[in-house]
Length: 484
Image (cartoon, rainbow, N blue to C red; front, top):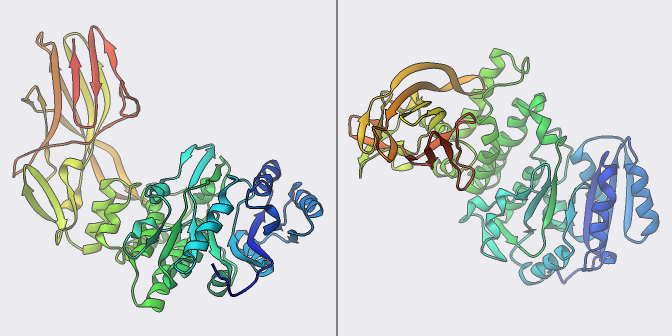
């Protein structure tokens, strides 16, 4: 902890408030209930031109707690504008940006304060776990960094543990004011990551404290849910965040470190998964420029950073790497597996490319299954011939073209080849179905089955089965089983 200087408050909480009347009191009350002592926390409520009763609620708390609650009323200027105003008025040792529709466990500030007391000489930022509630419930995917307990993470080593949320972070105020919150932003999102990058470029260390949770309310009407309908989500976002992060990193330290690459790639996942764009959002020329800019940015992302992402399909990863390297990958046949790789980095296996099962008809005598298999034009290989093995006996499905494609921003990246086959049981009590691709090297067992929404079973439920005419169908990621 900074023991050389006195601060009026240990923490300043800057709360940007805009039309959150139904949630605001509950949020502030969770701050007041902190066992650290609310009197040591400065709450700055910036009413960003609310048109509901939020502003009056802010005034109510300022009147009740005049010594440590400040209210600033301003014209609407957006999240970053409100935060900038609040930061300039803050006088605490540490800064936090608690959102006015969320909640905090009551031990959060005491736990974070203790951690800074022990590790303040190492870190400028401390993070707590995010737990979602409301429209979506459960732990946030970023919580994996808390699995090893309270610690200091070196982001140059554990680059995937980057902090992207200001609301669940606590920052040394002097550092924040020196490096961040200098100007208003008009970004669609990612304001948090942009400010945190500035701090982590200076000091790539992150403290993590798992005592106490930040309760993040997922609302159906939240910004993230509608942002794809705004033009800022497209080229302006790439310029203001992704391209900025690359240029800022190179300017400051001469390269783009992997922790920054990870944040860029994490955000680009959602763009890569967006096959169709909203109608009339971009012209055909603008759409081409948008894809080209994303592919240009991806050239700064290392192969292992691409492969580490969990929210895009293997199809997208292969597409990214092929575009990045400007050529198709090398192929390797190892232990009955067909592998693709670039200089032995970014390796992926054909067995992990999915087959989708869509329809099934089950009778006492046979089973008929229909689905589709992707055709990866960018792997420089013929579309592998699909075969099915029923108790080891080979069956060749009927193949046919499918009109649907897997798209990225209106561009086809994967074609679909439909298939259909029937297996007769011939009085067998048990039948095991496995799916293979026949390649020039050998048969590859596909170990990633996807179940479409119209298929009789899925892989989301345990003990999931379908019963018809005295036959039970079960399945998992690697095979289907039918028993009498």
